[in-house]
Image (cartoon, each protein chain N blue to C red):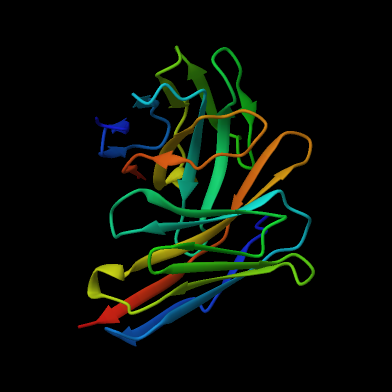
Length: 112
Length: 114
């Protein structure tokens, strides 16, 4: 069963615009991570935010976490064509062993 | 520094055939994972190895076996391939421990079963 669900499923924007992707989950978590996947490649880690953090930045990326709403968002500012990829959230939780669960992803297309 | 290396990159099998997917990491990571990725479903965990000498089932272990050969290598075996196992398989590794750490992924093995 999947925990993280991304919204929207697909997003198309112009270069220079901001892109916002959302992730909702159902049960308590330890952390939430965001990954990027370029076509035909493996996932690349972007940011990890812990359950006691509310916001985190890395370059043009800003991640927020609202544990009361069980949701997170990933904002990419001033997007570039090279940002075209699929973006996945993954929730980490201890529950009878290791559990990191990936959502189905948001496909972002940035038009030059 | 190669990171996580998976072999082969592509494979076509007939139903009932067996094969082993290989994965090796050179980051001295303790934990290793096998996922499958199907269209529209994200990644699903098949098996993981929290440390050398241990393996545990993930969300979708049926039809698969794994071996943690040493700290570097973690293989996935399909004993009798079925069309439902057509997928892209990813191996990943992380430092491990009780504190979740980012995972590093290989570029995948694209497996088709006819």
